[in-house]
Length: 198
Ligand code: 5GP
Image (cartoon, helix red, strand yellow):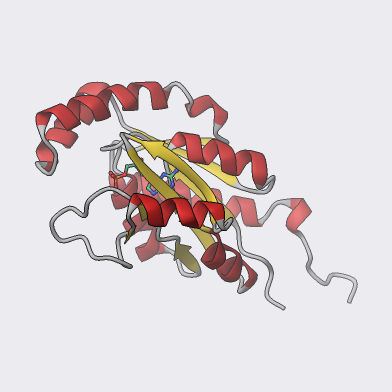
């Protein structure tokens, strides 16, 4: 039986660079599984169903909730987002470390329901830099960018509820920090199942 994988929750404001940090983490570290979320928001150009998200209708999403298939879900900027439960359980049982890249309301639900979840907040260096990154992405209207910035400011207030804060001023360094967190978590004495006396 492989040792059960970790459950890593990664949050941070839209534009904090969570996605880029996670991509870099995958280059550095094996044994990870990225949980593909479901959402009711429309796909952005280039986004593929089943790869970036499972794009569901509002009714479809609500059915998944009713069937208990979401480990957590939240409404964010007028859309539903949620983590399908099945793959998370399955991959952890196989010994893979599962990453949930989710916003703060959903993260707090995971914290409440999964006592062993490891909570990491990716912090942008400043609000000015965050605005620059969001506008630079060019995928959202100015109105959406403004709303996301407002949401971001509220999200940053919750950072102290996380176990770790990683400032993303440079992607490689931030990914290395997350890598170190995972290594340290695996070395926790409570997780020691090794066979010294065998
Ligand atoms: P975006 O629309 O930019 O892809 O995502 C908006 C926000 O929703 C991001 O903060 C992202 O991390 C979060 N998000 C993505 N998937 C999930 C999920 O499954 N659950 C929750 N609670 N948030 C999610």
